[in-house]
Image (cartoon, rainbow, N blue to C red; front, side, top):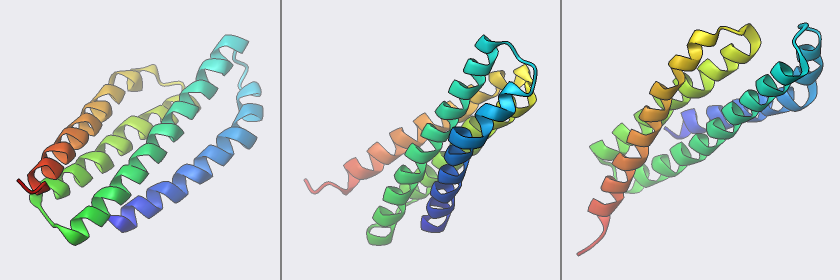
Length: 130
């Protein structure tokens, strides 16, 4: 989990830097109107932001799992990873390809992320001494 968190974080920085420095000029060359260019850049930003949030969440889950391993933490880590791949991954592809149908898949990633947070909350609750 910690390895995946570190890779996800590193890739988030790379994709964020690309979004800030390379994507804007690339989007201008695609022949899109100004509003669509702005939408695509904003979508890229959302994808990077959620990827970074969940890289940090996965890092926390990994650290917790080292001290108090549980099935719940494993499920939360898997849900965060899968959710990020679906949510951010589909948004990245949507931005560069314009394939709008991917917008219908993105919420599945969001649901996986929510599941990860709920399972993490339950797992932490169970760790709390009575």
